[in-house]
Amino acid sequence: MKKMVMSILVLFLTSCSPGINWVIYNDPINNFEIKYPEKWTETKNGNAVLFASPLQNEKDVFQENVNIILQDLSTNPIDLEKYTVITKKQVIDHLGPSAIIPVVPGVPPRITWNVL
Image (cartoon, rainbow, N blue to C red; front, side):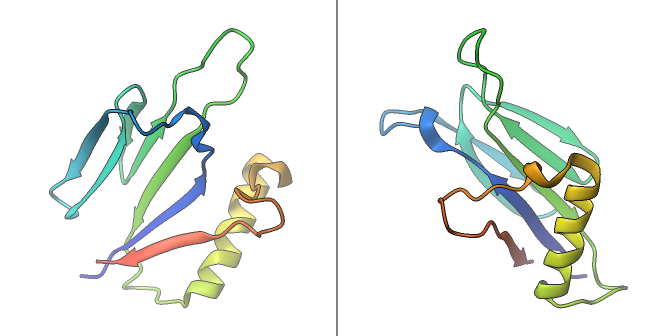
């Protein structure tokens, strides 16, 4: 069975440095792993896992984060372009247009994926 690993990365690595310690998240059921900074939190929720940075101080209003969502698309195969359009619309419908921002100014945000 094919599964698509989809992650919307809205990530600012300002808190990461060369001396950072990494933790490995391992998902043996879906056969993938990812490294994340040890001070970040990991939250698993069904077919999704969220990694979030700690707030740096009381004025910090944004938590850098990475979300990974696994979806079985074998019953509804679509190409990446159509999947991207649908996913962006869902994010904007639920969180508003400011929820999708480019990581690099002038470069449109994108959805990354890997078929397992």
